[in-house]
Image (tube, rainbow, N blue to C red; front, side, top):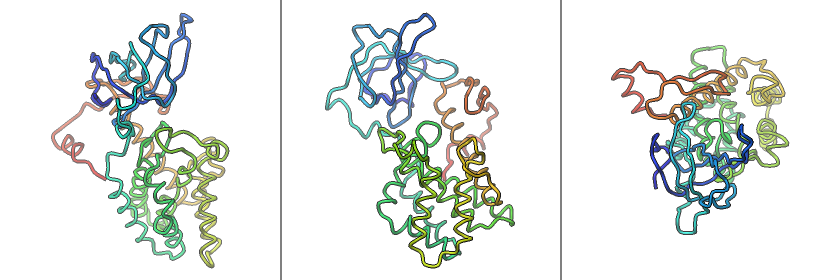
Length: 328
């Protein structure tokens, strides 16, 4: 099969891909068409079926593996498929592991790095709380390692939650050194725990969709409740430390309109919110650039950033080598 990441404008592709979403919409002329999101382990791509009544278009639903024939085009700076034929793939025509997008980094190596941060926490109560989750709770560990950090926006792949958490923790570690007023133990603990609610907010792959609990409560409230429950197992956990940690978790989206029930009032909460926003937006930008057609400079308007996105064209040997050898 040809992986989505290898698609180039002008190619005619055929193969089996997982239908992540499907919507029936109306064109400006009033004609129905299908808008799809197709994925494999290398990425995702928007696809359109303009003629639903074509004899080459069979019936299929979301999360079906579909065998397609399509042309690769560019629309608003991004690759898109114009699907000519589509049918449900037969058993034996695909291998499920080819359709589960995963972090480009080694999951076990990332987890080892996260454990090193946990070991560096000097406050005995915060350290014990982290140990309760990331060392002693095998069910939590298994879910955390392989969960995504989002449904679609950023780090929406297996290991995405771990990758985002480690990236954020690295940023917070830097901030704690750059700004001595920050309590490092509180900030690092908050960074590691800030999104743990997502293991319950989002279902496992390939669905990776919101659960009922996620829809009703959201990961911030879920995560806060998980932390409070674990803290009950730790004798004499100081209430003031627990309240300040809880505040960092509840306020990490920064604004009430972004889903946080509280705005940051602690310097650690402010640092966490800013670092979380930075890591999420930089990953989103990376994914946009990876998805864009080869050679494109202007990538079109992006709703999240509320502006047109452009690829950097200033390159030198040092910059190119740094991109090629970048690591966590």
